[in-house]
Length: 324
Image (cartoon, rainbow, N blue to C red; front, side):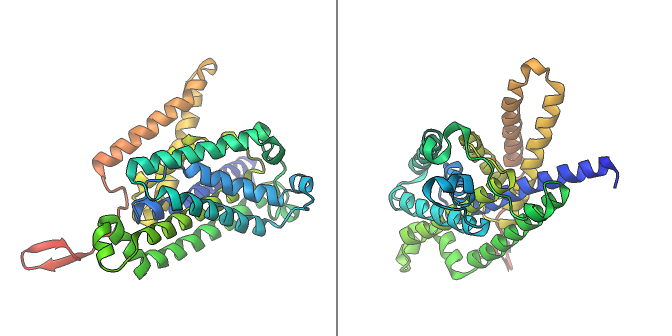
């Protein structure tokens, strides 16, 4: 195979793993916001919890500090979901009593706190130096080149497919219909005997678990994580993906992840090529501006996103109107 083709395949598979990871996280955010109306602005914190939980459990050099030996990667991924889910439960019990702006401020503060703890708990997380030598599944058989990247991409796509199918079954079940009812009118749902607080908490916990899983998938692909990987810009990227793709639609969340990540990576490459070396620090800021322009265009041209929430339509003699 020609070298240039190998290079393109390597870059393409590397790019796709990142997009797939973002799609997993976006599905968790879509469950919280798109189906339940929970304004979580602390996505980066739950992603960080998942990434660090899996990395600390599975990396022999780190686990050895505590008398461990390094668990299998699958155990690390399950632990990432568990830790993020427990964190979501603890946060949800308190924060879900708040509404809209107050919930956003609370979750943002929690995410910043998690990032600061990771940056200062040097004995546990490595502090600003992060966690290195995180094990990569299948690397012992396939090495570090293109075959391993393609194999990991297949694994990430499998995880994304399982998450997507599971969420589709959930949101199309009576449980999912209750979430939509609570999002639209909490008091009406309560009058029918539902418990809005319980359903919101369940949605928040499951969404947080998926964010933690996405963080673990990311950590074991790059092999190194540090607090700077989980800055608020990550939350901005995930919200942009959901807005562009369309909240309340799982297909939209996945599509938005791939589109926005393509736009982000492409804009970064172009800006680095156009901007002089001495001004490269401005390229990252311009990337954010361009994503903001993309969000604005989406809201103007497609307010519900590219694939907005599906709305049932009933046909009546007087014309079409939304059904019940």
